[in-house]
Image (tube, rainbow over all chains, first blue to last red; front, top):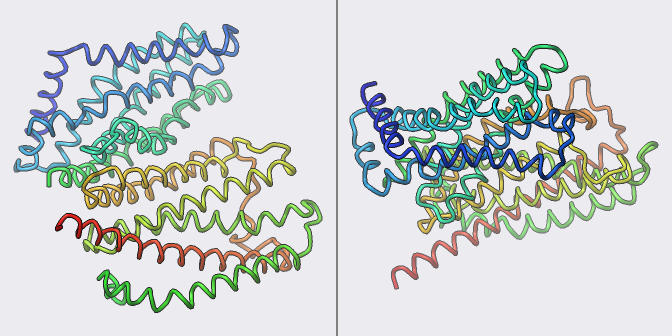
Length: 221
Length: 239
């Protein structure tokens, strides 16, 4: 557990010293979202209807953006070899990396999304649902993305390949995340969607660290 | 499983496949011929769908085999990661594009059938969408296994992906079902027996068998090619 905390703090400290990396991801999220009204037109009822889907898709792309560096930097400077040799499980190390990724991307995205949601004309309850589903869903995105990053470590055309691997696996999260706002409008609550998102996060938590560790061991060979 | 272990050796597999291939090719050709004759000429048109029901004889078997093909990829992935079977990697490499083609044929025939029946080539229906996602999973597998200079690394990465994919496939299917349902429910494998008339069911099952033979044939031939390719690469490295 000490190793987990140490690695998590190290990754957070690295980001803290270079906050520009996070700012770029958030800026991408904002710009990508703003393009939709420009592309579709300013009718406010249409925008309110598509807001959840647009914000969720943009959050999905934004969280993929920073992923190809998740293990690559450690691979290049040799830290990954030390992690492979370390006396504590590689699964925990992979989990720590994903947790750090979530704290610096998923969490800020969930905070920023309601602000952009206001511009799309979402009401108060929907904004709350949007933030809650993003909080519950982005850990899954970080875990699945982390797995894709570990699998493509050292591959040719890494970035695009990473997206091709991760996006189909992220579909359930997207469906229930964006569906929650629709469910709220239909039935007045989104607890079911939130519970399913939590279940998806738990499935990802139970499977991806092992797969990530297996992939990292191959990369280290 | 123990009986299949002797095939893990590529040289032995080659001897086995070369003995099987002539008979298998003949059987595939014959059963496809008879199947097409049954499906296109012998079977009656559907009372609602008319002649377009004949598209089903290609559409449904390819759908079944596209799904089974991904399960095969996962099983081969497990064999590679657990037992390090050298042949499993080559066979997965050979099978993935075949499975992807089956998924694509399923999607294309489905959209050709959808045009007269639903009035549109594509609807965002649950079954179509999950088949499309399966196609993307195949593409990811193919791209990943060929993305490394070191072929073995690509094979093992793709094996992990296939295992994670097969866990996620039911979840994707469930979520897409929840998302939208317009496609007709399953009508062959269900409780209380099939709801399809035997005059249509028989050619359908026959075609499924023919497509299965074709799948096995293509995978065997492509696996042999992969073995040759790997040998060439090693020979080039040594030269």
